Length: 523
Image (cartoon, rainbow, N blue to C red; front, side, top):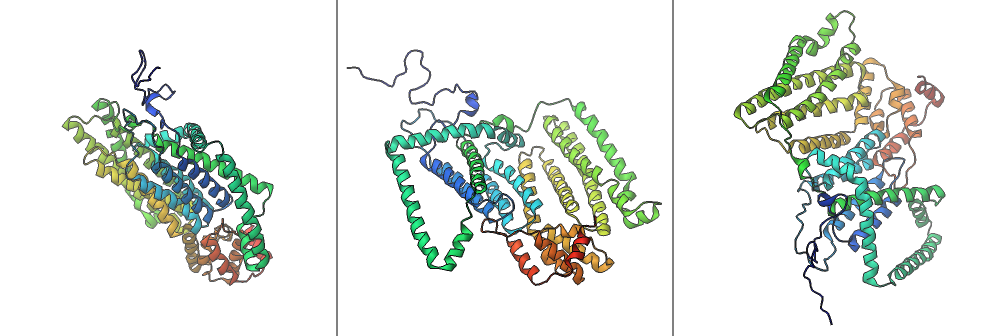
């Protein structure tokens, strides 16, 4: 009778109880979790995907997006907390971090961004929040702290979804092994009994009470082929995203090298000469064009042939590009400029500080130009959004000046992104379409001129402000057009702004709809 031992055989690598050397494509940089997904992880991801399939409206912002965000967050929390117990404890533990404390901030920001669809109806604003939520979500699950680590998370997401699918499949297979071969049959039987009970008693309640029947019809959509396709599409996409996120949280890749803020250094003259010349160019521009930058109304009046539009447009976009490129230059210099000697550090502070300070003046110039243009021609979505971006650029430049005190600033990328996220959430709270409508209403009181085609294209967020328009004909026209373009909502697409707009529109009856549509469609 032979006895098995835990001693390694000749030529065997590692201990019998692991962790084993990785022979996968990614090797030691991304070894994987090393064990199947827990039962709670499998069930949580499937449940969150089902909730998203039933609640997310693809054609509008609404409550369903917020519900799906909460369900997805809960699933990832369950997948992170509840783990599979090890049958044999590993002799050597993998030292795998799970991110820093600020991941809770990024997770909360992701949910808050998706929740804007419950309160704001502007499609462009919710689309911007949705795209930003992908960035904050990546920051919440990534192990690294640099922008390169976040970019790597985006690139590895398809691989994480594929490997995560196999990981979940092993977890589901493990569930069968733990509960014997009869588990799937019992699950199917439980599901069938539950559906039968709900169908029988639900049908009785529907036939017994008309109010309950109306609530049931509002909650349960009419099942058509397009509805089934939408459920399958939304549920499938959600399952893939949550699987990738759970896998990255359970087994983050080793991105330590990407978090290094210093790269290969260049010679002092190789960076100091070009950047010093750039500082001189910025200084010359700010000095010589000081009257042009801040001349305002007097400069427009004294310059022959110059209109307000030409004054504002002549350099605004170029100055925005200059600001963005300057941030790239500052980031490159901070990475490649040497800082070991005291002279290097003094030179770095002087050159980059001067460049950042001069760029702040250019930011102020761009904002001033946009302010003049807005005072003359009114506020629009593009003008408001670009002005907010330019203000964010200025805030980042101030952070660069603060970071120059200690030279090293690994916190700067994430703090800059956090400032941008908070600015976007603040813009959502401020109601940009409402601000635009208020601006045009005030301008109408002063000039008796109004842009009906543009205002009629605003979202229901603008309705309360437009209701204060002095002209009854224009007010009735705008409210009628926005009301006809506002779709009816079920519980998935419920939106506070649309609900409020319907109440306001109902208080103002239609007046001359044919004339109104002619005015709105005249361009």
